[in-house]
Image (tube, rainbow, N blue to C red):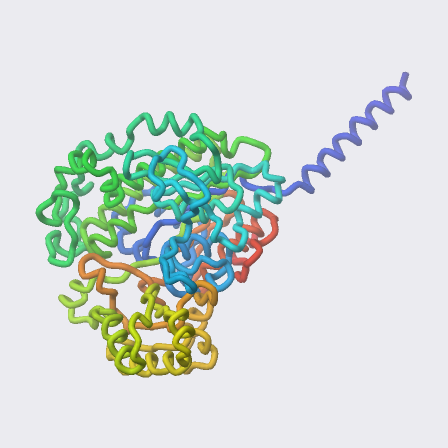
Length: 547
């Protein structure tokens, strides 16, 4: 009897030891990773509005998380599709293939949008333009792809955004789903690349008409407008009008009627951000994310900050109010994650796809150098080429600050491509609006200082980029941004982005050491103990990994 009892105790002891060994050897991953990429968020917005933020949004991230204050984008052009792709691939356009939000096809001269896919159909949308999208143009894997492969695709991966490209590219090649906003209906939709019907949870969400509810009372400042001392006057000449408003001023009382007429107006209000976070929460519940045995990944793009920025500029009352409202939305979202996933059980990182330049009118008013670098540029260059080479339409486009030559015509007419490029570069470098113009095939040999040279090289995709790169003088904008603002260039106002990690196994702290956008994916790979994305060139940020 004693012998049997001893054997039983030994067996139980062995099981306990083995169980503890198994526990100690397993990877301690977060239940859910949430990537929040705030569109057009300049790094300085963390601090410019900090006194107005509450405790639970941006300030919680900075207090509880690890905040990196010197993170730069390491390529040009600094635009949305490239930003999201580079964050999630740890790579650059030269490698991952996404050369712009759109680019010019080098063989046909036609415009190519980064996610348009004629081989798929919209699901939940009858509009081909809105629905026919996929990641088929993306050459590299993403960190979300790597998580899927590491768990034999048991991990649930979802991308959500008002923008198609900003949900599709982060979610990778084989996610659970990617969903974006249909401005024709006010619903979130997807494409047949992912599924043949909307999931029931999303049908239920769409049926609630959240957009209509959110804009019902119009848009006024969340605080008394007199407290917005970080912004310029509410009514300035360099801001666009919103909907049927007669002036670019608060309150925007006709927002509900404007939304009823055109659902897309919600994009250019803070309520587009609220809507996005609500559909993100619905996805968490609908797919039971963060409650299984594997780590799940939710990629969220906060896009209304970009639309508001483009319309009003980074010094407007509208953009300040948008960030104050986003702060409250983030607070509620983090509380939801605390309750549903568990505080300390999930990981959040917050960054941006790019920043934004000051409006041309703002710069003029404050005696800063500014202007429009491309005003009449293509027309003048084409006339010059016609006079010299006796041929028309020798330039297909100036796109992404790059000149695309009509290679078909050059070959057909047996013209000297190098002579044409050298002629254009010489002419451009005499233009007072141009800082540098360079042959993209010869960047490595050019007399251009760092970091500009490397950023040109990283952004140059020989199959999709143009022939000549133009670097404008500081503060110069393209002519389409005569009101509001835009982004695309190497300068700090476009290339300096926030980066904060918060949550499971992340210590508190901050750093001013230089890092790059491409360092985010390999850092996540180290946290999750999975392989880097296939095109990764970034390095893990060891400060955030040290226990």
